[in-house]
Image (cartoon, rainbow, N blue to C red; front, top):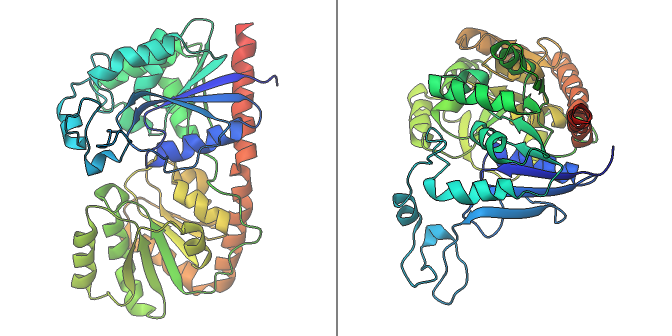
Length: 403
């Protein structure tokens, strides 16, 4: 494939969360074969949370880093003054913003971003541009020059994106105007195709790539630890995991459950652990930057989210060689967990079934090791070069259709 000028448009390249993490990972892979530029909607920080390959060009529609007293840029959360000497804080910036006139349903978009973003899209010097949210996909369709090929991507699930008539109408118009639309799971791609009968848009699925290289060998699975990680919020369902693990804490006191992450529900989850009397065997370990090491020193990974777009943490556990035990929530676990092969996939919300599945993997060491090795082998299909090639195949198909 010839070397392309690619542009990726995303909300916050320097931010936290799954979108910057996975999109930057993809950009770092694509820059091996193409000239890649990222257009970011907002900038708050000096340095990105996730490293961006220096060969990837990055520009921002709005730079909201405030100026310090001596003219140097500083973290907006610490306050500062703007170029006119006026005090600036995150709250003062947010208080001045009005919803976008184009996508009022998306809180990331502000009226102050509308024209700068449109101008950036109208003047983009690319062969192909990739949007990463429904709002950005729609704006790309409206404002990118006709000579530029367009590909939309989304990181959430069909059910969430189609909750309101306004969102559904926006999606239909956006997807129908794109050359291609890429979801994270096959189930979502099927739903979008059903929603868009007769559309000429190529609708397909490409999962995210694993965040780091697959481990050279599977984890030894010797420590009696079940591990889970994510934001401590209602969406991730750690209360469901704690309830399901409580009987195991009594029956298998030599095992423990470690939950990594920070968030608004920490005190509530701790109170739940204390109320159940399992504090010695279930621990909230806080946020960690050493997740690969944490996974390698565990023996089972558990996921009890209420929903997922594509659960990267399951993929990361697979890349380490951990067997998986997960609720079959919408959507993503079913794409990764092969029940009885690389883990256990349990009907969503069936607490006793989750407890039983965890006990099965804990008690049966040969099964645990077999599942862990299979998960490790399966993870190779999600390595960055493999996923990058799938994107290149879409790019090639899109460009061939325009000739």
